[in-house]
Amino acid sequence: MRLPTVVAAALALASCAALPGDDDDRYLHPRAFDARDHLPPPPAQGTGAERRDREIFRATRPLKDSPRWSLAQADADKSRILDGYACALGASVTPQTNPRLAAMMEKMRGDVRAAVAGPKWKHLRPRPYLSEDGPICLPRTLGLAVSPDYPSGHSTWGWSVGLLLAEAAPDRAPAILARAQGFGESRVVCGVHNMSSVEAGRRNARNLHKALRRSRAFKADLAAVRAEMTAVRQTAPAPDRARCEAEAALVARPLL
Image 1 (tube, rainbow, N blue to C red):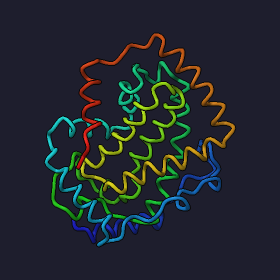
Image 2: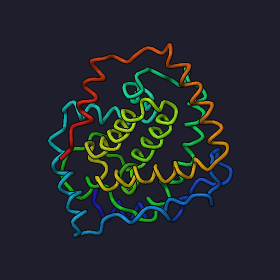
Image 3: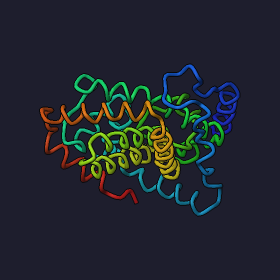
């Protein structure tokens, strides 16, 4: 698919795209936090930061079919995010074992969607594989192509969940936040996001989390989730040790 065609399609979608509104089940009123006010624009073409993005994209294409590639493919499935954090938590938790956590994540999802959609449709930055040759770890669908690159939605979501889990299980915070970094970097490994867009996702999530911490409803739910997590972790099965050691090594390895 040619880049001009993709950009034209993205512009057409942007003209009718709507941010989540008042009726969405979320913590923050739409006017309480606008990510467009907090994120800088993506790197301009020809700058050192933009050249760094190109270099990292090219350097990570040889990762195809490696264990890190497989982890990136697994991380692409947002429905498996709790399983993805199992090693960092030191416990296997699910929506069934932690219904309060699952409900809080679902409500927070509306806030994350808004925080991602605003900057994406403002900047309309194309994904890296549209202008660079190289494999990607996902099917090359039209939906993926017309969804702008900046900021990374997966990085924003992965970090948002990570920040929540770090507060629910503070003794595991370092491992959880390291895994959040890995979730974001998986999008670079996949070739579907620039590194600067993944870094913007981390910043986006941190800005959103600060805003969420000012919500009484969020703080009340967080207290309940923390109590639930403390109780569940006493009996939850530990994830496979070999899997966790391999995952930790992959996440810790620099991409460049």
